[in-house]
Image (cartoon, rainbow, N blue to C red; front, side):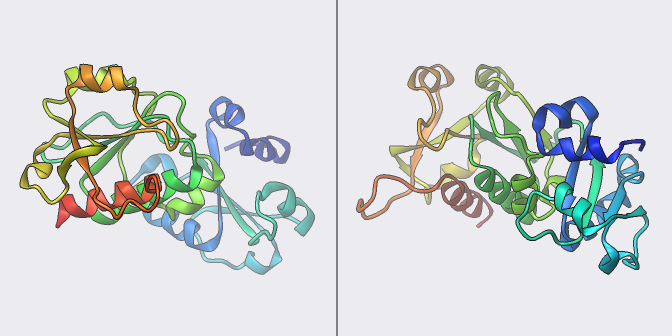
Length: 242
């Protein structure tokens, strides 16, 4: 890796992550997850660490670069820098699907925390892949990376997957709706792909009709209008694995 400090500072912006082909991971826990992932992924073995004096003796397989507190503050996107940051190459999307793997499709998910939390749950239960539509938040956004707690290394992801490409690809599709069968219905576990909409707008109705998606509902008391997207997806994932 031959990135200069000025280039690394730019990695907080998606256009430069795409242009330079790298992203940032901050914090000891994420670095440890990166170390584990690098054992099985050759593309991650040339990552570099940038550390302050407190972390100069941190045991790592990666090359360490000692920087000042001032430089660390410029590299970090948190108010209180943790003192250790990794520069890692972007991972290419994976289209090779296991036979019994379920797909979670997210349509224009916007909130970094939601995406990171969803990826963390998918990694916890395993055997899921995440498909992201065009217009979704970048999974290498620092807030997504932090909230995923390293799950980005354990969940197969596909990027810029058009909604209209789902129907020809998957035989059976399920989605959430205010009116539908209960999640506890046995047939909920029989679908190949589960489609979830944007936090505010959901999924366009015309697309749902074209997709012939089976609606399911998470029953509540009706005191509020809706659930948080990550909460809804996590409930569905748990029901699928129960």
